[in-house]
Length: 281
Image: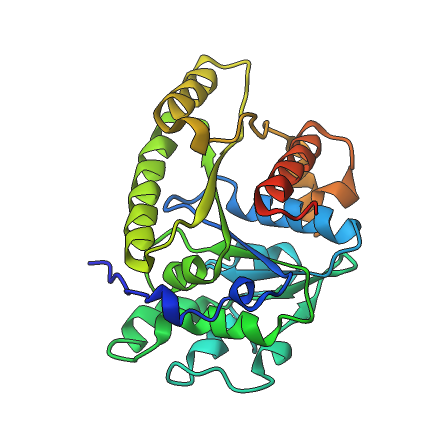
């Protein structure tokens, strides 16, 4: 059974409430393989190439984001897991110790370890575990312009931490029928969190892996837009084999090839997100 952690929004350490410019975007869905990690890497790379200081955080025990940049989540010694080992507190200086560099200048990584999968069992009865990431980012507020969080595809302490810390949520969904069921679960979860926090977390559903040549993909996109309407980005990220090639090299997609169909879509998405979050001002 999944444990839902209630978070009192008034207690959340939120950089936005402190009048700080850092923008925190969570990327989440309760289904794997929908493009969460690709979205984090693509958007993070584009932001860094614009001259922003960007941190990408891996909160998925599978560690796909960590592996993308050449680190092994099975053997890595310091990771986001360490943040949760101090009875709901975050020691001074610890977040900085967990951050490492990537192949993209201006883009840093807080990696994941597979030990994150044990948190639900370890954290039973520990107070304040839903605010660890919020507290962590409050300590890093002057070091970054953007933080993007890659999430586990399951509801629990890690996703609740991400949702509590985020100012904007991006929900990637593959344009195929099985992914729509996962999206329904995610939107139900989001509704529960919004009611718990008594605040409306901004969110945008992002159709991914769209192939206009197939009826299944076009019909799925039509269904997603018909059911969720204005909550859905008006475009879609197309299938792009260059994303796979970029991941094999450990490069952000725009550094591997800046003019593919997929990269152009993420550039368009980024401009939309900046408008939504006031980042163009």
